[in-house]
Image 1: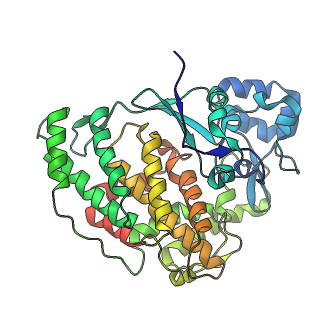
Image 2: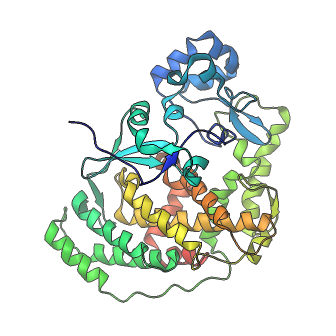
Image 3: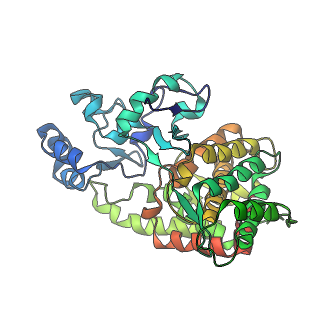
Length: 417
């Protein structure tokens, strides 16, 4: 039986008009052990990577070096094209590189849903050829599709099977379609989901359809407290910005175990990276952030209007609904409420990044372009390319605290409401 493939209607993609963005990111591009052996057996690859780069390849990661205050792949030529691809062809490069910006998840109807990263300018701005003509080849290049988790869990330990947690997710998607600020909607979804979990029969190890329906009706019928905006970011919002957006600032973004060719002066990068985090925590100081045209004073962000309740907020609502529809967010077994948390973290990061970008340009209002770039940042840091298993202890602890402390969660959302 032929595999059913699905992608957003009218979406286009073509790898052009982009200064090799995917090859110049502060991320680890990983590949299999077989690919690593193939590269290390090739003299051209070993010569290009050098001895230090060969050690990185042996760990299953593409080596990167710093250039123009950014990391870039050692195989990227000055013309912003891949030297490895020129030398050996497209099928030789790592699967991750061949398939980008495509990923795939097999949904509950056994349809393979394309995950199209908005970090890619072609996907973001929708230019090129229709993606439906490319899906089969990209799926083969990727090496297959992920599968959705068969169940999620409540915080109390009840197992919610796939059919049941998707009923809850359908309610999330419908409520995110309303013409309200996504922060207000997400605050409501947290309360509704928490109430749903409390309404499930106590002591049951696995929820069944009838109790799930009853618990969901009860949760949706409760009165929800409105979200009141905060004038300044909460403590945990500042921690989140310091950890995630701080990692996009120079020199934090050029550090990493896959970096080669370190100069003696880079020993000071650790101190400067620490100062980046201090700057975010204090809300004062100058930062040089990825995808922002020039350094900016962080305190100027306060002069930029919040926008999630305005027309630009619709871009964020549409994106959050897309995240639910493409099912990747359900590919890892975890807590049901953690899905709402991830959508909320993404919303806050998108908003803060867009406002930073506007502040750097001397504007008091964000543009659609600012928000679209913020969505790409959310893809990079949270919802597409970042692996939960690779997050540090601080981020894992922060996530758990926000999951279990309602007022801290609401304060985070209120920081950008």
